[in-house]
Length: 555
Image (cartoon, rainbow, N blue to C red; front, side, top):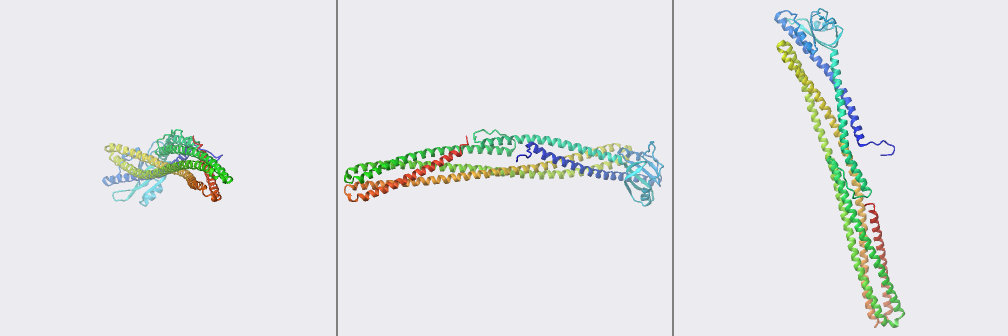
């Protein structure tokens, strides 16, 4: 993160990206749910008072058919008050029977009915519904139905209503319940986020410390990170494997560099020894030129020098073979190091695949949660139907009078269970929606981890390129050693020719000048070979220094 910008901890990020969307969505969902429930409550109230009005109209219609008159028995009308439903029976334009009472506690019987309702119901024979119908100074949700006699003539109205104040209280209670549940959910999920963050944060911190230790060059420091998350465990194991492979590789390079340094030192010594032999040969050739008359006496001396040169050449050949073996060992160690890096790359690819699998599993979890949401919607619909059946059962129990009182109690319990089922289903639905949100965040986190591993793969690829460069330099060294071997074989040929020339000196003195020229040419060739050996030795010394410098950071 750039200097001056806000830096957040892992816990703060989880809380910020978890609680803020949760609180926002909870507020929106609560508001929308309350509005939806208010609409549903108004619709349920309308359905309830409609059923009650139909029940009242049917009750007194049957009484008119059977007896021809209406008895002033208020038991049926008053039975609905326990459900906060008021009933009134209007004959003509006057209230004949009613459960509504005025401020003095008297029934409003004998008062005039609402003119708008009379015009619509008695005048036209239609139903009349209002959500703000004022009776005796109080607002009601009101429903009027025509009351017909035995001849099916409209003689009045059946009224059922519920006080607007009661409906509003129910709506307010639902809103408070939603707010309490939402607050509890936010607190619970905050605690869950804190616990999860602490569990996940510590292993990542330990891994970061271990990687910092590796970057500082300490490759033998033990990695003590632990986790219960499968993917984090995989990262820890991969880090440990990287540490082991890096330690083995550095050890092999260190050993190889030391061997290369020793070989270079031996080549330098051999070059100096060969140079001294060449100087001795030059002195001998000069002596031959200066003392041609005494060539026979000098033949033995030259022969001794040639033998000594042969021995030196043999030693050079042995050292060249030793240097070849050392270079081949270096090449083998380099190939093994590349294989180790390939294993690290394969492990990193497996980590990428594991993160992809985790994202797929989270997506599958989201699909399962969506199915849970469908099941919850079905439960809510069943609870709504059960609530309506409970109300119908209550009405039938009230119609049965005393004999249906026990059935009314059962119906009321069924209604309570239905409401509890609806509330529980809504709570589960909110939890399922939140789980989908959290799963989507897990997918995002898995993608971030995958990007980190891809960056790591690029670094490994760069390391492999460095090993390719080392392989190229080793191949150059092998080629140089091959040149030294060729030059050594050439010296053996020259030695043979010198021996032949020395043996012929006693009989072919006239060819002395030509022989001297051949010896001089051979010496110049040997000097060139020695110079080449010295240059290759310096090059190998520089390579050894580079290898040692590259691994000095590791302890």
